[in-house]
Figure 1 (cartoon, rainbow, N blue to C red):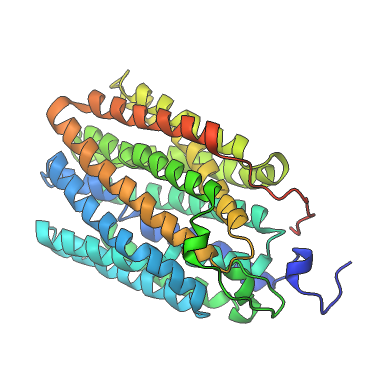
Figure 2 (tube, helix red, strand yellow; figure 1 turned 135 degrees about the vertical axis):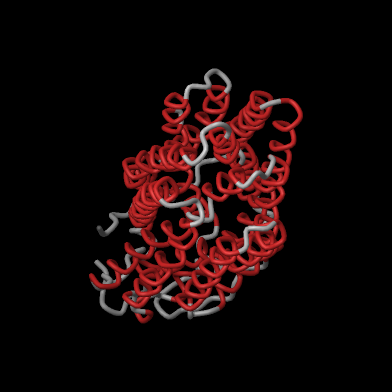
Length: 418
């Protein structure tokens, strides 16, 4: 049994956080999703409605991705080093709101590109910082369940934002969506204040030993000599390369000939995906602790090529929206379990957030190239060719993960706290 002075590293159990801190973490995940949704899939639809072709839309989205690529790894290292993780998140929220305001007021090519650079360069702290705060608050033993809960609230926020922004785009204007993002930034910052910094174990949050025994972080060179980590990195890059362009390309398809109604169709796509994530995210966290990581991730990899092929078989709007159920399955599993895999592989290294950032950099490269390459293929050869290309990449990713990735779940099963 754990004694009062026994460190978290020996038991895997973190002292129980206060209800206020847990509520703040829930609301932070919910509201961050609201803020990010407005400059996510809706941006491609907005730009297409402004008369931009596939290549120009792809370029604008890619620029934001490149800015994120250049800052993901430094952001992860910064999260590992700094204790003021709430301040980093707040900076990203303010920057995202300012970028959305610029897009709304001056939607010209260079202003949109500049906003994308600003947004991508500063909001890259969200992923590693929220994961670090969560791990530092609940500890390793409860992280499976907490990560599933984070994803549930994040997806619930996405659903709320997608419905609200779809209605705004249809009833008011496409531009109003970006003003809505600015408004949502305020309660997001307030949610941060509910999280008590004293309840975040700094060492556990960076993947080191807790209980006040700060260890020296492992060398980055040694870290990336770990074969399972390299295999996971390659698989994750290919997964996101295949996945990243699908929803924007679908949005551009829906924008043609539907006018202002295209925002409602895109809203329906996002809502369908996120409702599935809401239903599956907590389940994924629980089952990842019982079944292991690999079986669940194989399911996520497996549905991706099926989804891409299905897009080529119909032009019916209702059917296209229904296919987004598969997107929800993949997003729920990958969004939860991929972070758990990284936590497994970096346990005791002090490099958890750096590794999240580094993998985020590599994934960002894949996602950004996906936007440009798939957009160009669609522009020259049609949407079916673009989706089939993405299906081929997804199939290759499944094969690599199946044959070369080992199970990473700890063999010692601990009883997590709720």
